[in-house]
Every structure is written in C-alpha cells, then in structure tokens.
Image (cartoon, rainbow, N blue to C red):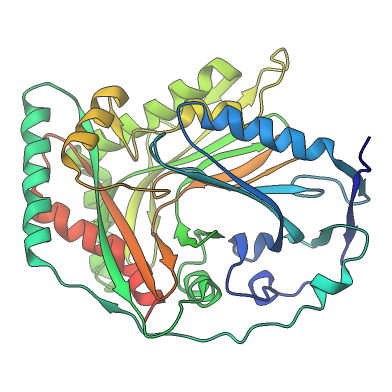
Length: 406
C-alpha cells in the first residue's frame, strides 16, 4: 500500500495582503476585500469534460483526498487541502482542476497556511518572479461589432416569436502585449478598482466577478444573482437617477426575474427552506450598476452526499449566463453565438475536503495565453432588447479587464 502524503494546516500570526504573497505569474486566487485563499505550485492537476464533468471532478477530488494524511489545527471552510476549479460553460469544452502545493487563507482576523509534503521550505523559499506591468494593444474589428448586433436582433426575433423568454449572448476581444502577461498584475489592479468583486485566477483565467454562483458553508447555500445592467457616468447625482431607472425598468426586471427563478428552482430540491427577497437591490460597481438578489437556502440534513459538485450540476448554467428556458437558450447560443466560451461564464472558485466551497460565475475575465489575452462580455437578451444598447453594455463590461491591462 502506498504511503500517504502529509498535508499540514496551521495558523499564521501575520496578515499580509494575500495577493502580495504570490511568487509567480501562474497564481491561484479567490479573494474578495482582502479575505479568501491564494495558492501556488501544483501538487496535482487534471481536466474533465463532457456531460458528467461535475461528477467526474468529484471522483478525482475524492481519490486525491484518499491519498492524504491531513493534520489541521485550524479547521473551518477553506482549511486543509483545497481544490481550485474552473469549469467550462459548455460540456464540450475543457474544465480545469488544480490542487496547489501551498495555500494561504484569510478570513477576518484568522489567517492560515496549508502545504502538501513533509517540507514546505523549498517551495516557500522559491525565488519570487519580478512583477511586470504590460501594455496591451486591442484588435479593432468593426465588422465583428456589426455581426454581433445582428446576432442580438436574431435573438430578439426568436424571443418575440415565443420560442424562448431570454438568451445570453457573449462576445470576445483579443489583446496582445510585447511580453508575457502576468496574472498577478491583473489581479492587483482588479482588487483595487473593484474591491467588492471576487478576484480569481486559475490556470490563466483571471478576472473579477460580481456574481457568486454558490457558497456552501455548513449546510447553508448562498447565491448572488445579477441580471439587469446600466453604465455609470461618474456623476453621483446622475448615477443615483440611473439607479432608480434601473430599479423600475420593466425590461431589466423581467431579465432579473428569470435569473433569480432559475437559481431558486435549482437549489429548491436540496433545501428545507429558501429565502428569495421580493425585489432586487442595485449593486454599485466602479463602472456599472446591476440589479442583484441574494438567494439563500438551508440544506436538508436528511440528504446524504450533497456537496458543492452536486449543487453546481443543477445550478449551471443559470439564466444569468444562458437564458430561459435553459435547453432552448443553450441551443440558440450554440446556433448563433459563433464562438467557444471556454471557461468564461462557467463556475470558478474552490472546494474543500468537506465538499463546501465558494464559486462564482467567471465573468469580467480573460484567458491569458503567453503574450495575448482573450476577454469576454455577455448580455441578457429579452423581447425589449435594442442591439445598439446591448453592444454599448457589452463594451462597459469589457472595461474592468481593459483597464487592468493598460
């Protein structure tokens, strides 16, 4: 019988900014307002794809856990061995699973470190790569903009013919730098400019999502749903008026209701009770405002073997990134969107040994490939959507990544 690999978790006395600890350009991170977890080094990694990718991911994670001898004096969510995961939007694309060698976490006044192996010093003392900011040049393609507006109009026509209620259409943009793009630089800028979002980095996918798909903590489920967007002007008085118009917009409220209902319906079979607020609140970010609703539920204690993987399989894709009804929306996306989303709009975050975790939807993000990056934006299309306004909204959603790469 092979010997077990030691995994050690212990408290840290200091509280250094998590993103400042990362030693190389391929970091793992899930951080919001200073709290979260970061990691580096790779103990094990794999990819999954296909219709059973969530259960395949669970199976691989469980096999890895069986090979560990865990010593954990801290306890709580995110302590002990942790799996960073970034699932694809479509089953056909590749999802990535990574177990870092070193993980540092912070929650409130508690900090901890986890390392895999008997001696953490070699990797803890690894030479820190110099952090370099780079300037990215973006491809300009007017024909692509026109084509996307045509796709939006096609979607509106399908919705008005009663084929479906809502569909989310995405587009991308390609940027190129003169040297390799360092995810750490992008993360630091995003965390400063968008502190209320969840900043993430997993295997080249880096971003700042405002949307929490699933937090599972000791039997409590939380999901923050965003749908309905308006750009900010920078004028406080004007933006206050715009927030009011967003909260009253029948088009945006309709889009938001579809998204909230899809989440509530997905988690209901697992819960003894669910709380869905009667009306959304307006979430203010640096460049846009969203209609937002926090859906919560209490996991039924009688259900065995329900973990984050189980719930993700039902939650994804939500109406916020796919549409309603989901099968018809997914079919239309496949038919007219004209690109592979990869891991954009898929679940991204971490899952611990207990099956708890915190995962967002990979939005406001980009996929780094050496000296190039592909960024994404999507818009919810309903019967009242205007292709020109939707194009402007998508440009606003590009802003976080564009500004982080200046």
